[in-house]
Image 1 (cartoon, protein in one colour):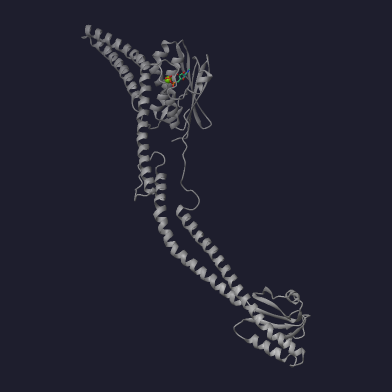
Image 2 (cartoon, rainbow, N blue to C red):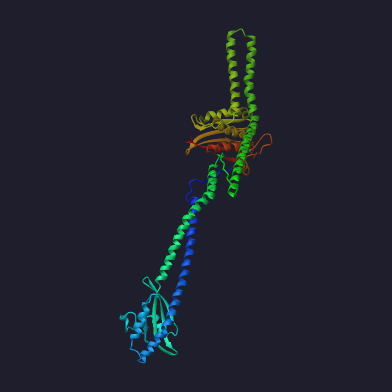
Length: 494
Ligand SMILES: Nc1ncnc2c1ncn2[C@@H]1O[C@H](COP(=O)(O)OP(=O)(O)O)[C@@H](O)[C@H]1O
Ligand SMILES: [Mg+2]
């Protein structure tokens, strides 16, 4: 059986449009990039400045150590008043503005304050980790501190000459300036990022218009080209890949259109050839249908010629002639009607009557083969279909049944409503269909009949017609016993 069409829908897809995605991705990319660059720049600058502060501190330590040791020696020797000179010196250094000192102190060998810029510290004994480390060290100890937003770099400088240790100089340099400078750098980076974004946005918009606009247009056009509507075209601008894509799409649509027309033509030709094949069978019946009344007409005409003057005779035979002509006309118009091209206009038809009409077309052939016919469709069972379509399907089934019952049998049609479907069953007692063939009988061109007798298109055509009404055709068959074809149509179809 031909497979159902699959329709891919692109409408109402959730999510962002291509253009928004492009803008979003580029914006995020700029922010991330500026973030990384900014982080690295700030880190590098900070490191450089820390190194500067450290050098400054070490230099300060080295410079201060010698005069302080001298002072301590003088004091020990009693050459100067204890404390006075040292304190003055410490205060003088502390108050100098070129180094941002937080504190400046001199400790003795045990960590006791012997001089400090803050006099309340005198006599205290320090035991913080830096002091402990500095007291034992032979070289300057540096440590970075950060407490409550205020960060500093602390230095511990040993005051010694040779092996003799006089004490430890300790001071802290504020890192506030460094922090402020890096904050300034960060805000500069943020401002330039915003600037980039603002400038970039214009470029991004322009680029997305230029590159994504045509893609969106292409997608919209493709969307429109769904289904049977193929009168669409992408207007191609420029000569880049997108223009090439648009051109290729246009020529593809053109080819699809041609292919569709080709398929349409082929379909019409196939339908024609199946109809032609049916005509063989119909013709025999038609000849019979016409021959009988023709014979009668001939007789009447003979009799009237002899007794033409008798008004009684004339009256009687003229009405017989009329009757005969009507029968012939009926047959011819039925045949013409069957041969007419389908317009697919559903109307409400009486199914029992429609089936009888079809039967009358094949009655001659069936009777000749000794096939009896019963129509069990109840009066008043109706369906909205194009009558031509419906009778085409029934005719195909009857002709197949006639072929399958060359040596007599019975043909039965039933019709009923079941589960909001209207069902019609056409049963014959013919040769049946083998298990192997039953899967293929709806395929176009599948036939078991000799050339000239079968086209293999009857059931395929019937399947196509029924599918147009969202209906279904199924078969059950037992070789040697007969076959039943079941049609079902949804009933609440307008
Ligand atoms: N009522 C039936 N009884 C037995 N075989 C049938 C019947 N209807 C169809 N077939 C099988 O299905 C085949 C395909 O039928 P169809 O499509 O009408 O093509 P065609 O009648 O031209 O062969 C037939 O050749 C026949 O083998
Ligand atoms: Mg057939």
